[in-house]
Image 1 (cartoon, rainbow, N blue to C red):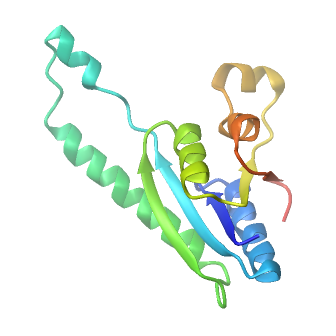
Image 2 (cartoon, rainbow, N blue to C red):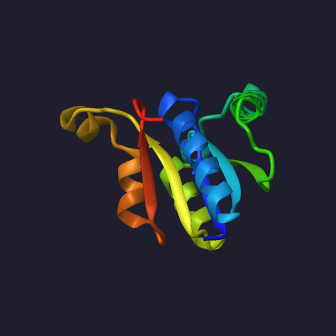
Image 3 (spheres, rainbow, N blue to C red):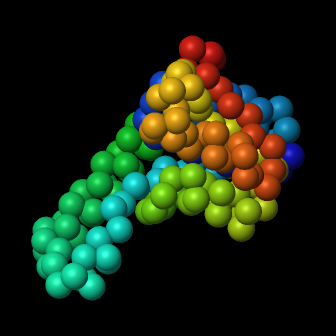
Length: 149
């Protein structure tokens, strides 16, 4: 196991997953890529209706990216990453699609990600990034619950 992908979103579950991924990486001498995904709204559809998108949208996207970087750096800085090769990536798009794309294109051996304790009903309405990644990933997925360490 040489490459581990760790999606983080700032939740307790993703922080626990990051810690677990580093533990595994240390055992197997693996490298770790931390990825966070900015869930950007697709505003291109408005063009065909003649609706102009607010020019401030670009500034908003830049601010979102800056905030995601700060969040990611804060989480990673709180962990012991010594003796582990780590890298970071900020992607934009639909979170589960970007995670799956990175896992496939990067030939990852394992995805370690958090899982929040949503009920089945809530998961039906809000969807679950973790569930979709588990269902379609090209490699094994280890989920870490928000109450696990």
